[in-house]
Image 1 (cartoon, helix red, strand yellow):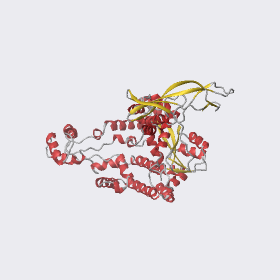
Image 2: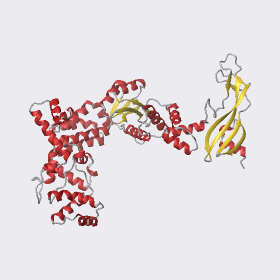
Image 3: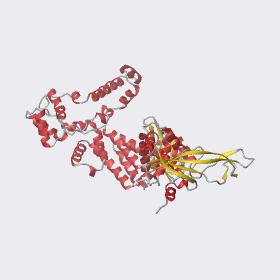
Image 4: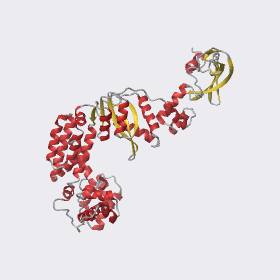
Length: 539
């Protein structure tokens, strides 16, 4: 049998050093009435022990809930005289270790609970959770609790991860620094320039390896702040940079993509022919017309500013059109036709339309029998241009630039049968793309096998091909040669840093993107410290 006094001591271990007078339940609150022991207490200014009492008063401390009920400790404490005549204080209030603090209205356990809630949820969300835990607290109190916490302790890591994150996307960016071996966040810096990183590295020397992306500012900052450290360029960013170069290269031979969809002799229509400008979107037609106008004015000797004033457009727009040799270089992926759930059934609709079945309701019923789950409106929208222009056969749209880029950048074994056939047809019609695909697969082999010693041979092979965008990519590799080779040889990468950036995004969204960097920094560092787990992306 457990005695009542022992049970209270087990539930409230911090009151064992007190004289517990009464425990009762009143108005939905568990109340503990206690007083301090009549013993000597040291002055907090001079540490002289005193037992001479000046007065007593009652302190009300909020404790953690018990049995889904709030707890309040009504503690009678003493104010004592300081016996040291040289002390600057005449009287002082006694404090109970592990229970009270000066001017504190909560017990340490309650304060730790609120700090954990504040770190996890911050202001308003934390206040709502605290209310469910029977703790009344405002959002500003929780924010002050976060900012009052000290940063977690850490030592300068051997492998340092550096990456950028957006405080306001497109406008303001910062730098996150992590320990790649443990995944712990070390610091968040304002800005993502070389001087910021170099200054931090000078203040915290000792990093032997620095994993970073391909940003030139981080390369310069690491070279300036830690000249003896080995820089490692992340393999994912190398592949991403290659994808950008591939997409830019595909925009040049795009004509072979468009002509291949209709055959070498152009589209075959049983009805009236359709003009090319009518088949393209209004945005594409406007871009082509503007490009032709600007190129014609440039050929006549007019300047950039003169053309901008004449056409009433921005100077940067004129410069982009001047740099583009063909209008296809100005067309981005959003102007390309998008896939539709009606694509597998378009051939059936074309056949039925060719033999004279033009009733959309009947065609919708036929497609439903074939497994189509779309609405009648999709079929009606697909047939509407035929009714207006009397087109009997509409050729399938050519594959877009981004789709061809995706086929080229993906592993051949991960392509579906239909995608593999379409991609093979594209490569057969475009010799330039076939050569580009061969170079992409060669670079992929170097990445997968981490054989950086073959990179020079790959660059030499790309120099012989007529692929200007790939030449620019190779030039960028040569400028960052040491870091690129290290990235292709070592197992270290920026994966843990990228994961921490996603964690920062989650915290930003949780606070509706309105938190300033100091609060964001506190929550990122403290959340990572509370997790206390090894990062899953660490080698």
